[in-house]
Image (cartoon, rainbow, N blue to C red; front, top):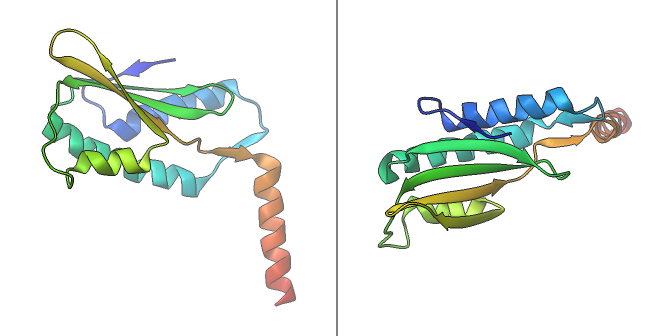
Length: 137
């Protein structure tokens, strides 16, 4: 499900998409806090970029069985004139970035972010393994 919020932060839009997915999914998956923090940091960087590129609208949805997060950003056409522009950071840190031409002078930038979930058993097994290693030390 896509969510559009004109005044919300980009991370709050992503959090809403994650919460919607959590309501629909079973107990077999847990949110990985480290992955969520990495997504939050990336969203903050995208937000700063948005002020410069004059984002018009932003939406997020959790896509497919992989539960990756698709962030869609509408903005005026952009021109990036140097390789140290913050947009290159986004390209380097997203799983995928694509562009769709919309109305004259407007584009949508689709940014695929990694999933923040992992199987609940994997989290418990990792915790158990870490505790065993600490006890053996």
